[in-house]
Image (cartoon, rainbow, N blue to C red; front, side, top):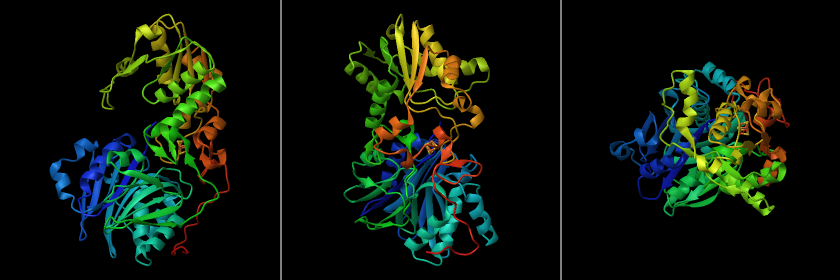
Length: 478
Ligand code: SF4
């Protein structure tokens, strides 16, 4: 599973935005490693540097020096909609009759083809197959007829799907979150300006203060002189559709998302995992890195209940095995897990072990991990998962897997246990997730664990009253 993208936007009183944008993108690197980019505006013109690669490789001192201006937006990307090539790297920028536009998008629209074909009929030419360019063209067209706020509202009334956007129109930076708030976005105070970012960890990196989350359907417009911001609640929805996987897996544990510290949520999910399906073993081990907070919550709950259980690190991760590791044969592919994770024999030998992970996607890693534990001398291996079984793909911008590849799509939990060769296997319930997030099923996106989505997706079921906008060949109503 891969997170889709990270977005950021900054307006400062009297200093260059390039370096703070660069540091923010570093803080958001876990949200996308395929490309990185920054677009700034100096009051006269845009400056852009966007390339394939990691943040540290994409920018050098000269690049940052030419990104003039105290306003700018940035983006890190893992490809979701659109091809894996430089033309889809972001921020996307375009100049048009009423100024320049830069756009960074996290999420995925589900009605892009309708809008693209309507705009193409009106003479718009597209340079990529991504949905971000479609939003940019739609907004550019609306800006010819409306002021900024009305133009954004028009575009929001036409696009359907998941989006957190940072946008720069000339030197004005704005942030928008889709009406159901599927992807995160927050506002931070930097003392001499303001920042909009996918995660609050980016604000911490800049020594800023988290102000609050951008609300679903809200537009935040930063003052170009860095002195403040205005907000507009442009679209109201009956319910939210926050992606619960942000808290389970994607976001950094030190980020606050929708008023909850991710680390605390993961520990709480771990506690609930024990309360629902705890088993008393000699030792509880996290699968690094994201299983750690779950496992510490699980072990705490077990100890509170009087179990004589140790919480220990039993798997060491090799941080230098990147995605470029070459695995030409099946045998070497299987060896890859040994390169990434190595058991600490003393913590598992002769013991019953509970292995805690955040999710099972295809099942191959879990099978290998159980085998690693047995090879290291574990007497029993029990697997506990801090999320419900993933049975369906994600259309909201997570690179997950197809239905055919998902082990839980057509197998029962018992069949999965047999396949991964664990002594027992349990998942966390959906209700426990909603509980830990102080939310309800109706205010979360649960598409990948129920097969019912909060948007109108072709050939898929939805779990609520929701309709795609009809795209007419004329401007939508304000
Ligand atoms: S389908 Fe799953 S991963 Fe995708 S947005 Fe919904 S909860 Fe998140």
